[in-house]
Amino acid sequence: MPNLRIEGVVVATVLPFDVEGAIDWSGYARVLDHCACLDGITAVFVNGHAGEGASLTPAERAQVIERTRKHVGTGKPILSGIIAFSTAAAVEQAREAEAAGADCAVLFPPPLLGNGASATARAPVAYVKAVSEAIDIPVSLFQYPLTSGLGWTTDTLVEMARIPGVVAIKEGSDCMRAYEENWHRIKEANPDVAILPSNYNWFLAQLAVGGDGLLSGLASLVPDMLIDLWTAAQAKDLDAMRAANDRLRPVVRCIYGTPPLIDMHTRIKAGLQSLGVIANAAPRAPLMPVSDAVRAEIERTMKGVGLRSGSRTTA
Image (cartoon, rainbow, N blue to C red; front, top):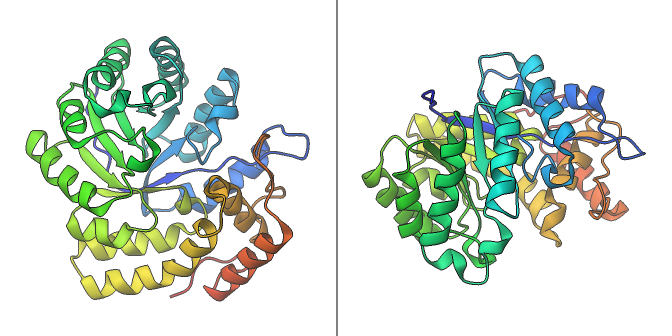
C-alpha cells in the first residue's frame, strides 16, 4: 500500500448539475479551476457530501474521479467518499474508486451503525479493517458530529488509527472537548495519522488546539480564505488567524447558519452561481434548491466580503 500524507487545505468539491439533473461537466471544470487548482490547495475530496456522492451512480462516481484527475494532474491526491449501508457495498465502492484512480478512500459511517452501535469499537473497527484490507490504497475516516449518533468515540478512533492503511481523519465531532481529546489521544496512538478539522464553527479553535490542515466543502466557494487561515496557523500567528477567521465568519454564518443544515452545499453552489462559476445551483432530489431569500442573502454576503463575478476574495 503506497504511503500517503494528507495535510494542508483539502477541498471537498461540489458537483453542479444541469436543469435536467445530469452532471454539468463543463461547470465542474470551472469549479475545479476556481478551487482545486490553486497552489494552496493540497488535495481534492470528491464524491462526499459536498459532491452529493450518495445520489450518484457507480459510473458517475468513477467519472468524477477520472475527470478530476485529468483536470488537476497527478500532483494532488484525490480522495473519494465511500457512502454505503453495508460492508460489502463499501468494499465494492472502494474498489471502484481505486480502479478509477483515487488515492484514498474516505469511509463514511454506515447508517446501520447508528442506534448505539457506534458507542463501542467492535463493529466500527471491523468495518474499517474489512474495507482497508480489501483495497491497495489507504483509507481516511469521516468523523460525524457526536450528536448525530454516528460519531465515533475517542476510544474507537484510537483503535481505528492503529489499523494499517488508515492515514487521516476528517474530524467533524462538532464538540471542542471531543476534538481536543481526539487530537491528543490519536496522536499518541499514531502520530502519522493526519487530523483535519472540518467543523465550520470551530476552525479557529480546532487549529489552535492542533491540526494537520483543513477539510471543507466551503473551500469550493472561498478557497483563498481557508488557505489564509491555514497559512496563519502554520506560522503560529494568532492575530493573523483571528483576522482570517473574522473575514471568513460572515460566509460561514450565511452558508451554515440558516436551517436546514443539509442545504449547506446547495448554498455553496448558489454562491458559485452568483460568482458566474456555474450556471445552475440546484441539487439532485430529494434535496431542494435554496429559496429566493436565501439566494439574495448569499449574494449580499459574497459582495460584502469582496467577492463578485469573476473575482476572488480580497483582504
